[in-house]
Image (cartoon, rainbow, N blue to C red):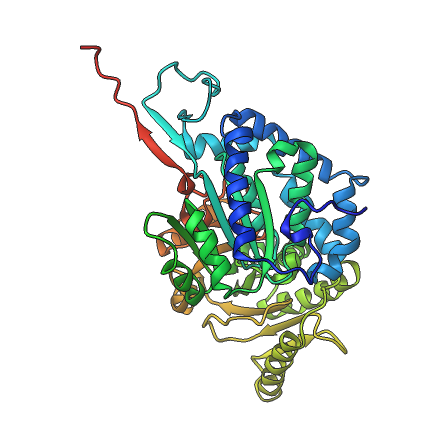
Length: 457
């Protein structure tokens, strides 16, 4: 299948974008929004998104086929990882889930651009209206495609014309998603633009920022600050810092009859998107004095990762990433050779997976790409001093515990400052209603109007 040239990302690699080209594209997107998107109902947009997602999960879908056939070379993720990750993402696109998101972030308010009251049971006069940005720019820097796909989705819900700029070669999957939307509804697709270039092209970014009503960005603190100071004061800027995640496993689930499931769920979190992205665990803290000891859990996790490498292999990584893993391995191999309380398991003849077991509760940043730390702790109270270094910078805490303890742990980590707490095995699969980093993902994009009708006098 040859994709038509609808987007800048469809142009050949040797094509060069200019500020004049972006200027024309921005003007066209705004005109198309006014003609084709601004007055679409929320139900209509949700219906199209759900249809696109349902089609994508069908084996014969042309965009799914392209993603799985060309995706490994384009993205660095294996076919199995792409298939599982994309299916999990699009499985969330149901009318019920979208209704829950809209109700959570917007309540019964009506879009100011709606031509009629479309929310079920909404009054004919409402004290609140909302509107999205006319022109929304997304600067995407994460390898997993979900942030870019979700940004496009939220932008459509707010009836915004959108320009998605992907760092480097990470435009492949957002481009396919945009083409799928275009095929389902060409007028909706005409309100989207996908492009890719390396960061630091100030002329192109200046053009985008000058047109934007809202700019969203992901990246390092330095990159976000660089963007923020160049975005005009009149333009809303929503920066998402690079964050980290970890897991905690309670002793009560470390039993002979449950250990296989717990190990499998831990492996799910490690291999999802090859442990790239803010939701991937760097460390599993394992409570001691379970029937299955913490070092045995680490050993079983290594065995499971070896099995997963056969069924769902890690994708190709750069020489720099492989060197970082090899260097870290060498350190822990030397430590394990001299200390009985430190152990390391590694994939033979490759850097495909690594499990490090050590009795230091301090949080360790993993080199990722299926390199995981397992750290025993006497109880949950010992975890919090260990993760003080990353306080305020944690995205997700994955928990494995019996139901009654799960609630206690969730409250404790919530008080500490974690913004998302989920069952182990679901760390890279947040629900559609997830409040990203503790903020309403849809609600942060919109502007409210309060309507004070008065008493008629």
